[in-house]
Image (cartoon, rainbow, N blue to C red; front, side, top):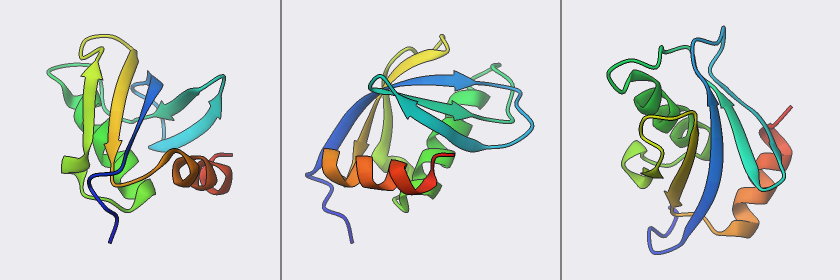
Length: 95
C-alpha cells in the first residue's frame, strides 16, 4: 500500500472530449492526459482524477487539483507516490 505522506506535484495538460481515457505522455515536466468527458460542470476534472488514480493504482481521493480547475493546464498533487515512482510508472504506461 502506498504511503499517503509521500506525494508528487506535476503540471498536467488535459484534452477533454477525447476518444479514450489515457495518459498520453510526459514531456518537459508536464503530464498529458486525454479524457472522454466534456469540460462542463467539472466532469473532465473528475475523469482526470479517475484516470490518474487508475493508472497509478491509488484511490481517487489521493489525486487533487491544486490549480487550474477551469483550464486545460492544471497543477495536480498525487499522494502516495514519490517522484522516482511517478517517473518509473510514466515510463511504463505512457505511449
